Image 1 (cartoon, helix red, strand yellow):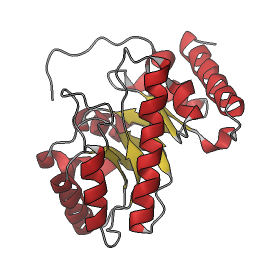
Image 2 (cartoon, helix red, strand yellow):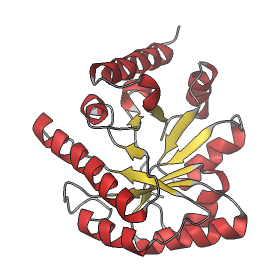
Image 3 (cartoon, one colour):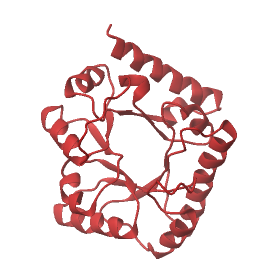
Image 4 (tube, helix red, strand yellow):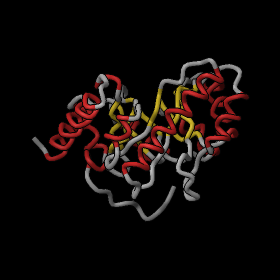
Length: 233
């Protein structure tokens, strides 16, 4: 067995155990394998071993991989999405995790309607208040929820956040628990289920699972450390 598959199996078992330790059913937590910057060959290995959900940061990279890999892969766009790339993103993305402004949300809905596609959307929430991060503030998300009277072609199914890399366990509980509480509040305002919480990465997913994560985004623990390209999208 390759080191990649050993890593994958270890993460699968660890995620399931974290759910059990939190008193949850492991089936409630979806493992999203974050494959950004890694080649299609690596994705293919993990796909053949049973993984179906993969996350990419860049629209161009997701599109290139989706064209050469199995059509049954569920692609999650997890990085910042520029409005001028929405149409391209909707060609292959089954989920979009980082809807960070009302304008982006409306553009996705409009183009999804034109293309007759129905990706699932998550609002990105800047719970920690870091200036370097995109996303709604919790207060802005609540106000935005009040404006949403009905579902568009791309349903809003939940929220996403990222915690600071240096956050303590206490801070992580506060951030992830805060996202869950915000989701509950928005769900009550809208009167529409928002079951998904995308939170937790390689270094903090056990705490995210304790606080209710339904999607954990794990890349390094599966694929290894990344060498980032020099050019940004």
